[in-house]
Image 1 (cartoon, rainbow, N blue to C red):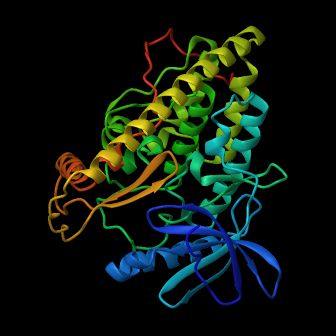
Image 2: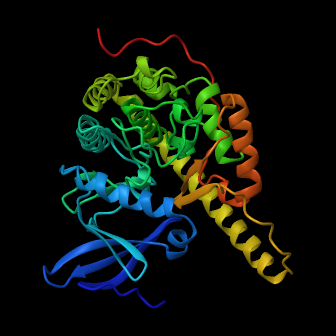
Image 3: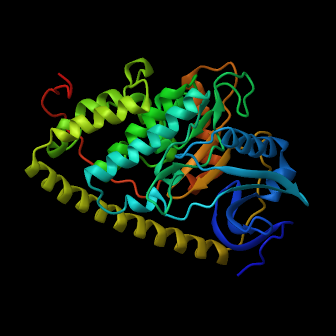
Length: 383
């Protein structure tokens, strides 16, 4: 095992995970004798651009302002020997990203959605939007309570100060709202869109859109029709149509409203369809697991082949590089688009930047292909 970092007042015990911006360790505060998750920013990022340090500090300040049972609590933020770190609540009940690899019954789904919605509604009332709601950012306490983590790209609604410039794309393509994907103005309803996408992923075993690159998936959130639920889950279609509406004005206004609508739709599904839907999801999950395994093996083989081949000098980085942060099986991207350009041109420029600058990092993992035929007309859940 590699040497663990050393920070005064903390006994750093083991690594918990690593992303593009920071590594997370299990640690114990020596004086308080409290286990914490210690998030330490990669030193090379701090040295390369002060914006990364500012974003890291902003994450801590936002999370510290959000004391709620369904949001990971922040205890401390500090710097030691060029190491920026955040001490957070140690949540050891697992990740939703792992839990959704198995079938989840409707009651468990609604409970998780309710917990996340409560945390989001609280954050929204306090004036913050998360902008990266996805299974990889939902943790569980030992009690089973779901909590929201990672406010690294969160945004305050009442300020003009932005870590990313106007017209930038930030978020995870598979769960990104149309207004995020187009670099437009976002508000709390972008988080609720992502929450609806998360419900679709859990119910069907797949994400709404698939493509060869993460950026192509993001664009589909803007251009493609809302996906259709399988026949066994057709009662949920009205929920999805409203939750994933392209126009934010047509979406649910609060997380509580979204969850209530989901519950009502699920209650209308006949028992026989519930059983058939379970079989369909288990099949889809098995296919996704096989695909992810194959992609992992191919990636490992490519990496091994690359290490044996001679390497050429790398081109100099662009003045404003694409910031790519890998988190779990999806990728959080931040792309600064040309100012003064139209959205269409911006998307094209962003696509080119992504393809040239990050290449294989943006290949999606665990994306399933699906036939999305249009079913019969939908009927509302509510009378």
